[in-house]
Length: 376
Image (cartoon, rainbow, N blue to C red; front, top):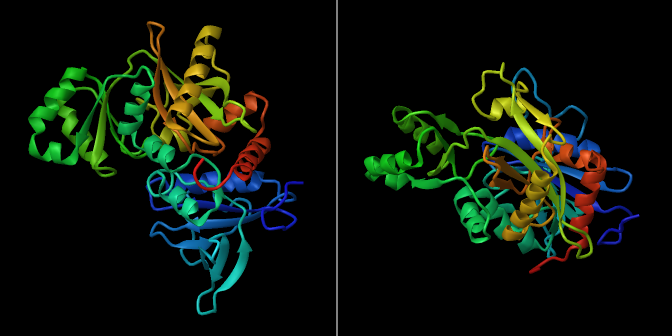
């Protein structure tokens, strides 16, 4: 049996989810699936939700609590008992019931931060855990921050020699001060283009722009999520491939999963794999494994590991690619905390690689428990 860092029979896992970003509901969906998959005979699980206002509360772990309903995506209950990391070690969970004296819940051995987007997947909460000396699942502060910011992510990939689609960065001030110059730079990419927030996920705020007349509206939509906007040339005719990466144990190199493919359902009405297609109406079809030549799959897996190592990732990541009509494989982006919802690609990739959902969650927890705190 896995031993606890503080001598308890079962390691205590704090599953943290929700958060202040636009991906709050997606994070809750992920948490519901992961909490159900954890082996509760081996781990003591404490669900902790972060409300959209940033309050940390104890949450329910009952089946079905976090699922899509007619009312929309689930949210963290803002009326739950407040919880925080406290004590000299920083590892103790302290609960404060409304109107009651705070009381200790016990020490936590590892945190599983299932947060997507800013204020969670971007290195902010990872920094908190580093300061507290708490082990946690996933990438560290720098890798999380770079993976979240598509602008810096692309700079790192370029430095590592990974080929990408042409793109430009549009800052809010540039857009306000000199829109004609921005429009000229976008036109140089060639239409159509994709306009997307630099630091958002789950396809929030992304628009496919077919002509210059639609550019302004698309930039304004992206600015609702982020003052930094990325404009990228469309990968016309490309097939979208994805690959999961897991950190190796005991110093072994990272491992890449089989390659999967996302295809749009032509009858869905979606022009690209947006949020609704991902999580609501099934407008995208996941094919695992992808029907691609062996050499292409090998190239994708090689580049996925190269991207993982370029950012210095730990734990897990999903890397997305474009397989261009001419045969070239281009890296699109990396996700350092991919979704674990029933329709998510990351668990499906590893299931097809021989690691089912519960085993995948167990592997991630063990990786986090194995690693040291502090600089690595």
